[in-house]
Length: 312
Ligand SMILES: [Zn+2]
Ligand SMILES: [Zn+2]
View 1: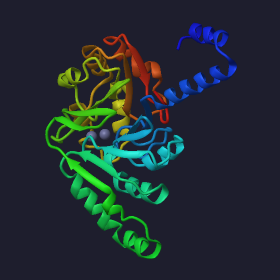
View 2 (view 1 turned 180 degrees about the vertical axis):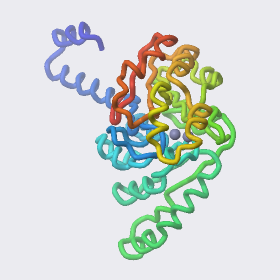
View 3 (view 1 turned 60 degrees about the horizontal axis):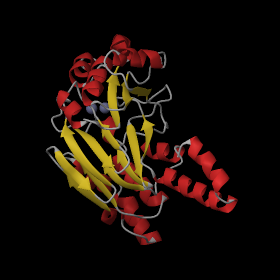
């Protein structure tokens, strides 16, 4: 509703009807597809700059679709005011620990904190084994609580769906989720996800080097949420990381520079680009202008430098 239309309604309908209309409008706002950045730091080290390890939440009609589970994700869901009850679907892009370290604990936290409910998790091979291994890790607690306190067995609430090629991941009445294989050597099974909801289409790059096929996959999306690496700060990061002999090689071969992110966003023709999984993620001296200056050489749309708990 534009302001002019709202103004017209105030004059044209009774106060009670206007309240009803406004409430209806708010309810619709609440139900729209929301994106909340839970953690915007790339890499497994713990953040010192106010950035938590990587995770992104999409809420569609108040149902939670969580992409990746970096360390701290459960706490970030609480801090975002979302809590753990809306969590219904979990998507893992690949099995680096900055994307899955809190996967098991998140399922556990949702079980003990909220009401017991089904969670479907999706991801590349290894997810089933990881889920079972976590249940084994907490077997004593789970079985003690079930015997002592009753309730539903966590192990019966989780359904794991592995896939090893790009394509349709899941679909329900609200959204269709598809995947695209991206370039993240030495990991072959690394995926981007696309969420086509009724009001918005959102693409999440996962971890990837420059991948033109991702631009095709993201064609026409409203929002592209892409990992980003700021090249001028890499040497400092490498100097400050203990035991980092192979780090430079890994970063350059497996991640995307800000300039290349701009190329992908421009090729895809998206409306909004969100930079997240920032590398370096601990260097608060890098300004938003620095994060975006090379992106802007190619991409003319809206650019958002991701910050923890930001809603888009
Ligand atoms: Zn990562
Ligand atoms: Zn990775």
